[in-house]
Picture 1 (cartoon, rainbow, N blue to C red):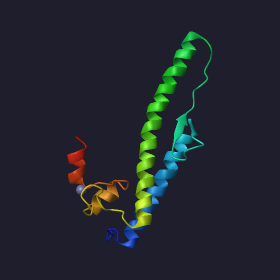
Picture 2: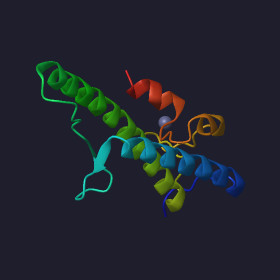
Picture 3: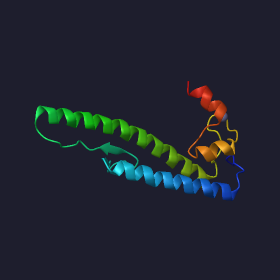
Picture 4: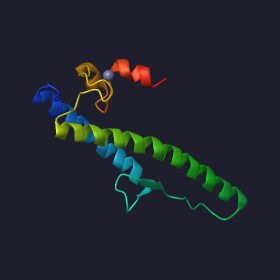
Length: 127
Ligand SMILES: [Zn+2]
């Protein structure tokens, strides 16, 4: 049997609501300048903007595109974290650190619902 976190249902429900809200916000933001990859539902491709044909306009297109790519990657990785957290709620493993298997501090989960690692591991691995 998998490790179960012993967070109460009400707490999990609140977290789930927060995550769903965050997911909707991220998807909406992504849809404003990207296309969903038809072969991979969690992958988005930034649209290449069409501004004009002069050299300046072409340069502006490339600059916009590269900004969009950066933003796309940031949003996409947040979305992946959110989806991962929702999946863990579904599986009953939400709130367990993916590195050490200990229960993550609920205060941390409340502040950052998509967290998948405890503070200790996070500082150990994010250096
Ligand atoms: Zn840990």
